[in-house]
Length: 357
Image 1 (cartoon, rainbow, N blue to C red):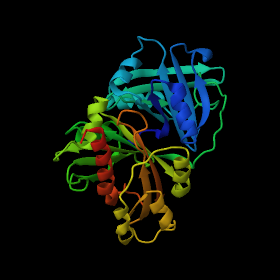
Image 2 (image 1 turned 180 degrees about the horizontal axis):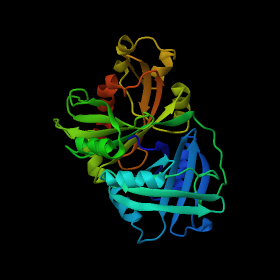
Image 3 (image 1 turned 60 degrees about the horizontal axis):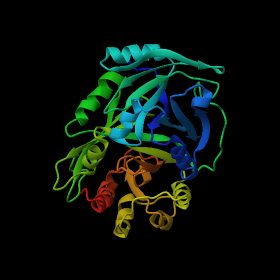
């Protein structure tokens, strides 16, 4: 039975300073503020800023009381994704079915409301301290409790969330793939072993899980044995558990998007110039200007359906945990297998600089 999951409604981050975090995503990444929730709107225990670009919505939340459990999350993980919220037309039915299939409850279905209306919501546990909440549609703004004062920014071209990647501990990938298959009815979209994703020093394994409509994709990674510490293990060491490694944001003009992001001060991984000596033999013709692709250090790959272009930021907080991907697809449905080696060699250079390789 297909579950009534429509899409990713929003992603919530717990952060040490929501005001400053939301400002970074507005000014550096082009998101517009669509709402604020806090003491002034009747929620004295937290401050939350909601931002949006295209169909992507992020919420940055800071607990305001010293004894809030959210502070334990921040102590362990730093600024990190807490909730990947899914929209559904039937919160109660979805929650009951998912719990029956083995999910651990966090919050039973309940109603939240304000003068604009109400919605049902619930939540279950997933990997690490990440949860999936479920919400119904709320037609009077973002969510109840958020004021509707907008702060518009110049967007950089982001349209939607392409995928959300989880890092798990060694030998835990299959467990969480089975979880999404059994509990959520997802299927294995593609998988990569340590022969696909390896360098001279490190390796990892990855499986992409997708919902039946294929509009929600969750790659799940685990470290594999190598000569040195893999990027996944470095993440686990700093996050103290499984968690969200990166969020891929889709654009239909990656050159323009990356140019604007660089102008706004966003830092990306550097790719060796030798990468471009052979990439076009593998990828073939693309409609974009190859010189601009090389200028902005954008990676290219192709599968039987077309090509993709992608680039990865450096971590967007002080811990080497969460980062962002910018991706453009021209028919390609894969995840850049041909770029894995170049990408991970770049990450290894960053790890070496931090003393963690």
